[in-house]
Image 1 (cartoon, one colour):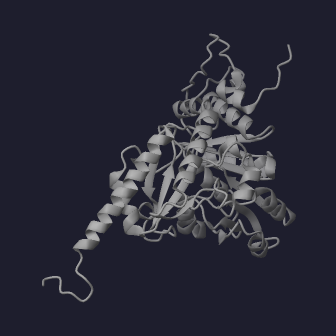
Image 2 (cartoon, rainbow, N blue to C red; image 1 turned 90 degrees about the vertical axis):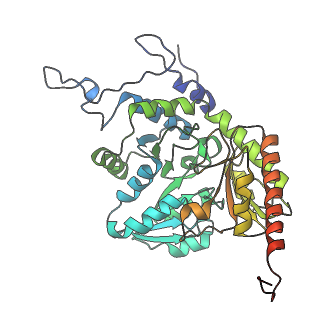
Image 3 (cartoon, helix red, strand yellow; image 1 turned 180 degrees about the vertical axis):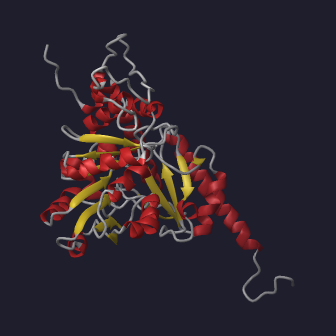
Length: 402
């Protein structure tokens, strides 16, 4: 009987719907073997030699993620999101010019700042949301890669992927998109023209804060893709079978979790938009967001579970909010079932370009009413602490010891 085509949501829920051919089990099996027996004639079963090259367990997770990102693409899992991202850059050649989103995940920015020069790359940061800036930055014959992140962490700026891909391709530039925040639930960059998609699979794809993983996907199995796969194999940046199994298990609830987080994030952003304690709420789902119209066009079913708030009282006010949260957890990372809050400038260090008055929120799957109440109470408590501290300070020109 011919198998009917089903939606990505069904493919995710059933982990591709495959059944263990030995037992009929519905849960995918884990294959922990690191090596495989050579047959008498010198060949190998399924051409498998050593698990650093491939393994049935992480191949299953790769096929599942590839099915979610788009038909015909290929996927390679890595030991972390950073291993996946840096594999793309390390597959370039010395002297290659690279354009990178001005706003992006701090770990990638830090790696580029510390290692890209020694790797021989010419890295230039540009505003990928500004097509004129991108066009002006492209160096014909030298620019080999444009790296875009949208929504861009932690300011949540939006890049028009279809437009930037068309512009880049007209100059022969490959486009890689960090799709960690949007996930294939909300955005499919390959369908908008991207050549590569990168994920920190630690975040939404796994979704339970218990797996470190990354992924790169390609629209074409070309020589550059083979360089990325070769880098993974030879550098040993491969995921373990148990982690790959946990990753595919997490992806089975991906659609439910992302839609829940997106709905809650929109409710929270809407509630606190215009709050007197806040300078700004940064969330692409708000009509006031400068990238809202583009986000509405390329994100389907929601605007993601990430938002940031900027405190009217500055960095001190932002830091004063953190001790009073009870439902939000004070922790880094994002995309898990629990809601997190953190002061990004502190996490990133003194060279961080993130404003000191910014708090980043990763919204989980809790009741949004509880999250709103928790954040409102923390904002009130922070204002109270600031007012008390101000009242204890000596008036201008008054001797503190008088």
